[in-house]
Length: 240
Image (cartoon, rainbow, N blue to C red; front, side):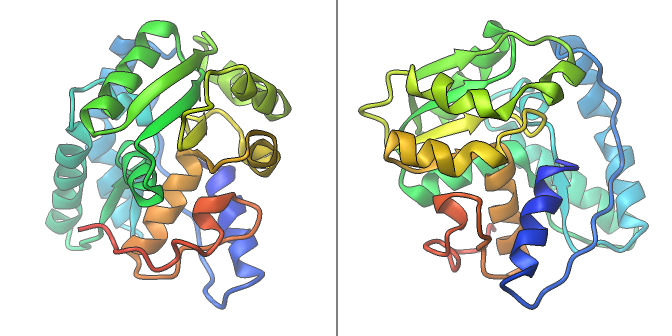
C-alpha cells in the first residue's frame, strides 16, 4: 500500500492535473495468522481517527485478508464503521477497503471467473477464494505462495509472478489477480503478465487505486497499471 498506491498516483500525475499527498497510520502485524489479523483489524478504528485528524479526502484500509478473514461480506461493515469514526472525529471521509476494492474491480471488469495468486498460507488463501465466491466471482485456480512472514511477503520478487500465474488453469478465466494482497509487490509485472496471459490482470493495489479515485469522483486511469486503469473504466460509477 505504501509503495504501489503512491507509485500509481505519481504515474497518473504525469498525465492528469490532480496532485495527491499520501498519509499512513499503521496497525501492527508481523506474521500473517488469523490471530494477528483479528488483532490488526481491531486496531483499524484508531488508524481511521488518526488519519481523519489530517482531514484526508479518502481513506484506504490496506489489509485484504484481515477484512476477508472476519467473515463473508465484512468489507461493507468495516467501511461503514471506519467512516463513522471519521464522522465522529468531525472529518467525514469515505473509506475504501482493499477487499471491497478487489471485489468491485473484478465486477467493473465483468470478470465472473478468475485465477489468482496470493502470498498467504493455503487456509488463508482458501478464505480469499470463499470470500470472492460469495461475491459472485468464481475462482478457477489459485496459487498460495505460503509465505507466513509479512516482511518476506514484501520482499518477494514481482518478476516471478507472471510465470506463476501462467502455470494456473487460467484459460477459462476472464481476468487474473496477480496479487491478492497489497503487501505482495506486483505492479512492475502486471503489464508483462497481461501480454503473457492475453487477458486483464489486476492486483489488490490496482483495484484499491481505482476505487479511491472513483470515491473522489476523479477519472480512474493511470499509465503502467494494467487494463483496469487504462482509461477504459475511468468513469465507472463511484462506489456508494
